[in-house]
Image (cartoon, rainbow over all chains, first blue to last red; front, side):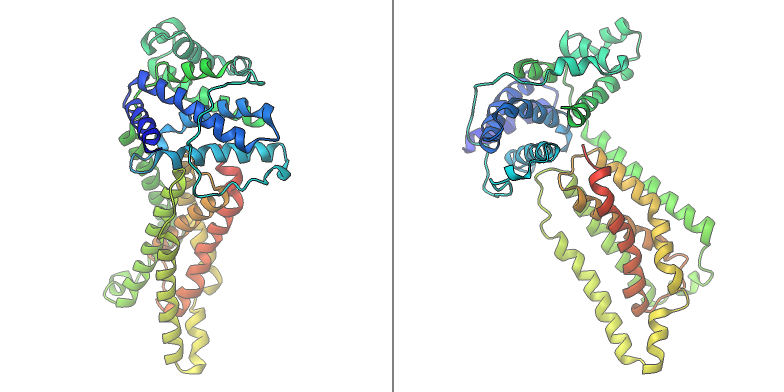
Amino acid sequence: MQTSEERLRGLLLRGLAGDAAAYHAFLVDLAGHLRAFLRKRLASLPDEVEDLVQESLIAVHNQRHTYDPAQPLTAWVVALARYKLIDLLRRRSRQDLLHDPLDEDSEQLLAVDGEAAEARRDLAKLLDTLPQRQRMPIVCVKLEGLSVAETAIRTGMSESAVKVGIHRGLKALAARIRSGT
Amino acid sequence: MKTDELIAMLATGAEAVDAPARNRGVAAALAAGLGAAVLLMAGLLGLQPELAREVHLPQFWLRELFCAALGLIALVGVRRLAHPGTRLGFVPLALAAPLLLMWSAAAYVLLDAAPDYRMDLVMGHTARVCSALIALVSAPVFVAVIWAMRRHAPTRLALSGGAAGLASGAVGALVYTLHCPELAPPFLAVWYVLGMLIPAGCGALLGPRLLRW
């Protein structure tokens, strides 16, 4: 269990320093842990698991600057995932699902579940609803893999506007997930 | 979109997180909030004319220390609450310490005073406006602290809002001391604390709405 925490933490720290490959490996690894964590706690809502895995991954990405390297990675991830889980349950106002206590201190992201179910919510469609100046940078940089500079040339936006667009777009995506579905 | 595709999307072009720049942003916001509070106090209320004389009194420094300690400890709590999975640790106990000290000092002064004079010690000359003015002066600080928290990821929203309110209330009280003529611990123990609790209560009520992400 130490190794899992340390491996994930090492990957994230490299990712935070700008190593996109390590960051990708971190998210892949983390998705398996999140899936197991959430599936256990959403036993009565199995269809929601993959949507919440995706939502938690977006949350981890959008909030990655709030990870303090001095703290255990597990505690940070569990706090984010639990917040999104409670948010979902509140959204569905199905408080009766809270049988499984959510505040166990000992909770660890130990298990891995690599079997991704189909997400019900299509993030690609949600992405289409974003305003142009957020959608275009995301499509160019995040989906087509262009650099920020290339995207700036193609869209006629400034480089900082591209960066801001990506950042705000991903936040807006999280907000749409929250208010929609 | 499949989860693998989402992950690829998130990881593609993910740049290094510039932590120092973010910290500078938060520091600048807090400084701006503090500056606006000072301007608000100086412009609306004016500096205390006796200030130059009062700085030689130990009660003056007791009051400054009281507000500053509460503000700093509450800001530590705000910082922890803004980072998911971080424990509050010593913060609640540490907050209690200056309060207990002030209340003890107030009790000592009251017991020591002549019975007829006790009510005057509690009410001072400005009891009617003190708490409301502290809340008013703390408003810009409140905006700054909430703004800073929104750039992070608080997961306990009411508590986080309350902590943000308490921190801004204490900082607002510290600024307000530059105008306030009251130095008696019984007065501070009641009206200053109440003045800090107003923004704290507002923060706790508004937190779930303001801080949601």
